[in-house]
Length: 118
Length: 118
DNA sequence: CCAATTGTTCAATAACTTTTGAACTAAAGG
DNA sequence: CCTTTAGTTCAAAAGTTATTGAACAATTGG
Image (cartoon, rainbow over all chains, first blue to last red; front, side, top):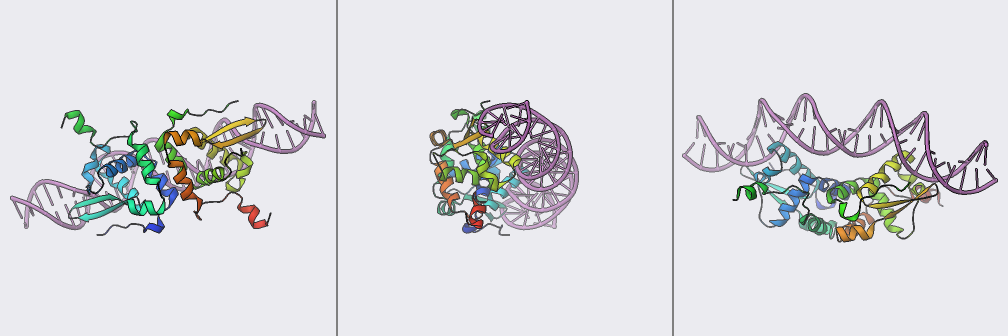
């Protein structure tokens, strides 16, 4: 039941960049970064797409080594692999997150709650 | 004859990341960074692909705002848009270039010359 | 045990991206 | 003017990625 992850030294720069070069996945990473330390389950991201589609994007992030996914019951707890990414590509994640931080063009996790007023 | 470039504020983070997430284009950017200040014409990159294919990749880099291409006679002089990228996404280009700097998996501009011994 | 919840897998399709070669344009030099 | 050099454009083919819905697991709680 443990999902496959690359080890730190297998993480590839072009693959990480390509994986982050998708607005849905960049929005996921931005949200994870904003809640660092708090493990997130997939349903948090349902704003960004269907359950199936998220499963696809979250698998891409995991396979690229950007996130770690751990099964806890029927949930998947997803965290950023910040330490591994920082070791491998110093400064990259921080600059991407900072740049994504104020990007109005990216989809937003939690957009629905704001419109409803929750 | 002036080729179309986005202005600095039109440069999009996901597009830049997606464009850099291709090994050929990342190799081009790494090479441009290693020769910063020296304008490069396209034939410098023929190691990385056919003339047509390079024209395609160089257009992608230009359209994303990563490079600037200026026509000088029949040549195209290509430079990194470092100042615009640094203003827009501080630290991003440097961390990408640093990470690409020692990536053995990326194709190398000038690989042929080394093998021949020129 | 049954139902609900959480997420995956599969196959199909749609939509893009990359690569190719042939034909083309534009400037430079003889 | 004619040829060479440098690069673009176009259309086709190949390959890849994203999105969908239906069916499937696995765990939890009643």
